[in-house]
Amino acid sequence: MHIICVAKKLYDSGRYDIAAKSLSNDLDYDNYYYGMYELMENIFEYSDYKHFEHRNLELHVLSDPVIVDFYVMAGNYGKLNGFSDIENPYIKEAEAELGRRLNISHCMDWMLMCHTEPKRPYHSRIGLIISNDCGCTDFGVIAYKLIEIYEWFKRQCEELSAKLSTLKPSAGKPTSENLTFNERQEIAA
View 1 (cartoon, rainbow, N blue to C red):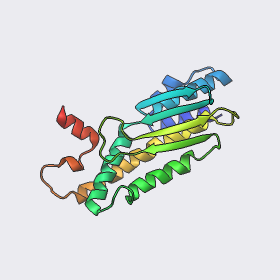
View 2: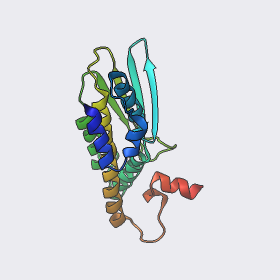
View 3: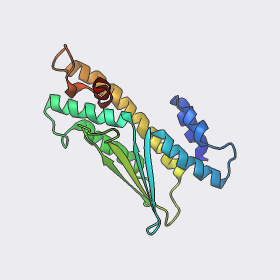
């Protein structure tokens, strides 16, 4: 079952508390899917869910500070190197990475909303649109892929942070353009 792979992936990344909180000790069909739904909501700091009964569709909206920070830093990298958001190699790579991870079922589509200058918390986010018509979507696989996506964004934030520290225009006081969204929120508070 995918539940073991998901739990191991969370354990290896130091986030096993999410598995312990989301998954039941009883392994049966109903608990499995309920646990995977809950786990999908808990991988990222922000989640929203809507079910559209008339079309038998689900919409999952997911975001986290690592996603928001990634796009802020990618935008800063683009500004420092003369790339527009459309030409930015980091933004292009994020979209390609989501495609590699989420193009797994004809019953699911995804959307990525990225903002290099967010106006509110969780402004950059991932949307999953899942059709329940044929029942071929395995939420365990989706949860596993979402964990991989979270880890990818986290690694990219570390890489971009290191790269930006060498590219910053001034060694003195940081400007708002080269701070992450969370750093700007802390300064404003």
